[in-house]
Length: 120
Length: 109
Image (cartoon, rainbow over all chains, first blue to last red; front, top):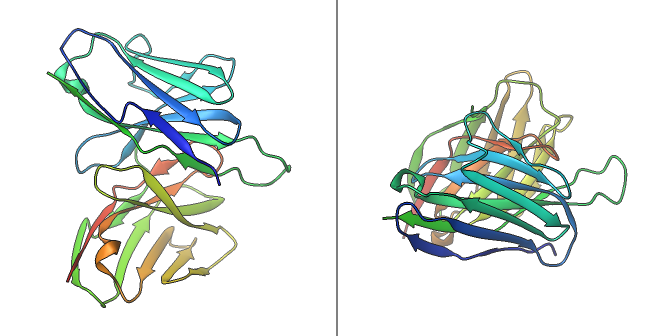
């Protein structure tokens, strides 16, 4: 199987503080990891694409300096929400794409269980 | 922007009935995927249908794809209470996924 974990599953922080969320691929190497944000009863919105060893690519409207992404290894990507505000409260979900072994084979994305961030 | 649009936004049916959800998209695709999300949880991949396929089955799931209409449907037969969840279609494949707005399905016992 392909298991992706996130830590923490829930976090409550005070406005102005920073929070780090980890995304790990447990049994495979992930060349690419994706970070999504989901507001209540809404769909997932891609925030950024993280490639191991290089800078993340952010979607339009996502502040790079506010949402810091680091993909230091093939099994770990972190998302740091800096100077968090109540409007950053959301469900953050990561996914990891396995390194494709065969050319032409679609590399499926495997999703983590999500992290519920509440900023008070 | 979200490419996929799904309808209905919410669906409530009795256990044992069939549930059909639809998804429309705007651009050309290589494949389309369906995911399930239980409340407050991550996504579970259900099924992938390629652009050259018209129908695909997996257990109680049946997915159709009409590339001429840029639409797909997910049918869950003989629904169970455990099928209560949100269902999303997504396009993009190995590249970044673009999700539809989702259908919240409630199965009443």
